[in-house]
Image 1 (cartoon, one colour):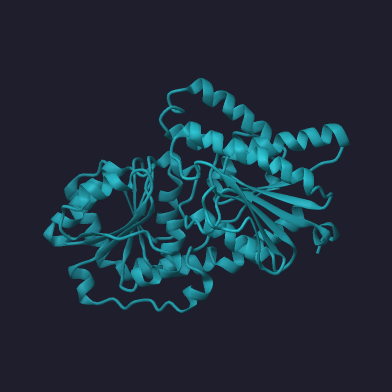
Image 2 (image 1 turned 90 degrees about the horizontal axis):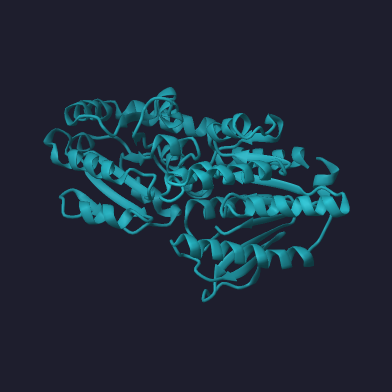
Length: 411
């Protein structure tokens, strides 16, 4: 092991950590738990002003949680989010001044994105004054500012985007290492932002189902009931990137055509989830459930199931949905719904490993029904490929080992 790495302490900065139950929070907890087995790690995370979480806790040996109370923790308004993130940056400045150490490794998550230019700015100031570099590592589960083009306001203001891109270009250059969740993000960082390939590695996200729980999962047997009433699951965040009108159209086809009489289960949250639920709940064969803890997903997949993954093509260049790897870990193939099939990394992935099918939003009803019927008839083939693909590429231990090894090399 690198001597500098063995002596160093890790500090992870993020606004996503349990008790929040989103995918990013779960991954951050799993990463910090794993790294704490090898060295001391502190997680500096936000909390609600009125939450009952302790400000300082030590849940495991070598793992310390420091929670910073912030206002508007769950707001969806952009200006309140900016105020919240700015407050977080101001308060962690105080923390950094009190906890200075030459051996610290600072891991920054792309949530919240404001931390990326903020830490880059601090690193430049430190080097300018003390001529000492800062060990900055970025975990990139999204790509900024590119992903912002899909949000109203940013897409209309090319001027704002142009200067944001320059800001992030300068910022990314300050990081000693970048962990990308998919090759598409890595390629954009290299080709568009000019980041050196040697400091970037691709380490995918793994299943949200805890490893211990996943070991107990017994893959359900396929029977005639599945072919009569196939089960489709839509889970996770549903927002502006997830083609909600097209999702409504596809689900409407699935539950209305008697040849593919599908039952649909919703486990969704996010800005567009209420709209989708409202527009589907009056239909038969659609059931809405609360968004459940990841450890209970094995109950959801206790019978043969398909996972619907909706995502715009351009968004797939900037992210890789964790619901895909979670689904694969449970042997459930993917029905990918997107706006464009061409030059789409997720389409290429699904087709390369034959873990499901990809359909374009503008597909005709007749064509979709025929394609879906073939999908159902070959379910066992896709399901086996899903399980094999997960074992080979996305196992939790393998990915966590890769993160630790990359930190050691980058130090």
